[in-house]
Image (cartoon, rainbow, N blue to C red; front, side, top):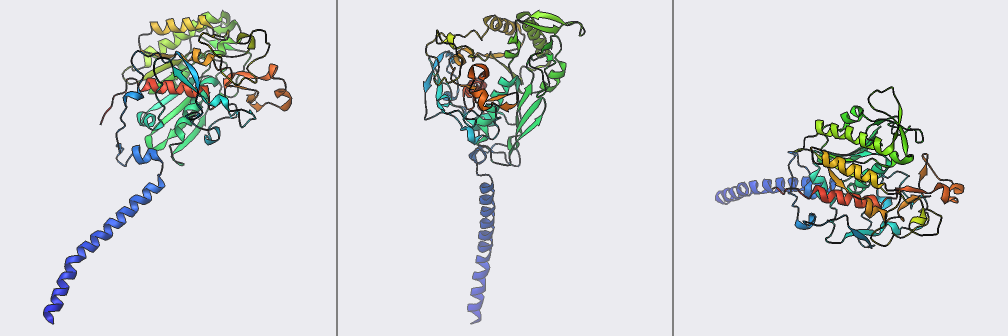
Length: 417
């Protein structure tokens, strides 16, 4: 009997560690599962930052993620694609401002969201928000320019925000900036209001004069201090220069205001900007892009001879391969091209003008804002006077600009383990 009891005690002692180990495994498994439930977004399951800040899985950039060698992605056509586009829905992005939410503001059709840019010689790489967030880990991307550039900034946020769980993203407004933070990637996507790039009396982000404009052509330091150290800078400046053929400006003495031809003033402003870049940019660590001019569609006679309207009620892109509206100044384009050629550092020009020229259908028209307020019923009934044929609906054309920016960011990206 004693021998039997001793045998049982030994068996209990032998299985006790197994039971304890099983309990520990169960507890750890439960903790892991609870953690995954709290971060169920695919981005954090695959690429999220662990406590040590290392990648859970490396992001591999495949050949189809890159622009094919020798392909000009700026030459192509718009093709109907209501399966893959839009890349996000208007109502799914809480960061859009009223100026761009055309359907919410009453636009009856959504056709403008279903067009995909198709280059003639290759395919535009598919935008993958996970890979972009991986590239942006511990980095800053900043869009600099006017309200058109703000639209591209909002487009970029909408393209990435759906893969980030609630509580891990935020949008902060600190005029003249907006800052979108992605907490687990320690990354920011930012916007900086500078309609002329150089300093002007219109530099307040919300309280700026539109009709009275005065530019300091050789002053940029107040803006530049906010740009220093930013990893990816995306500049744009055009439409604010085109209010009139002449513009009041200072150059040399800050007290002597003179009237300049716009093309001359633009060239001097680009020189000031170029000098800042060459003094402040570290080419090995920073990328600089410049978006070419965003076209306007103010006069329908340009694409429909004999008519006297604007972009209102347009539902389809312009067909053909050579349309160029009078709103896109070729002299300004040449000045920009020549200025970039003279730079001592690399600035990539993203020439989105021609592809955007075809999109007479995608402007906010009467479904946007005027002086911070949505148009009244009376104003909407008078589109000839009140249609906005400068700004773009979102989702829409600026998403394509960002697809192109994405493609260029990954063009020379190196895989690593």
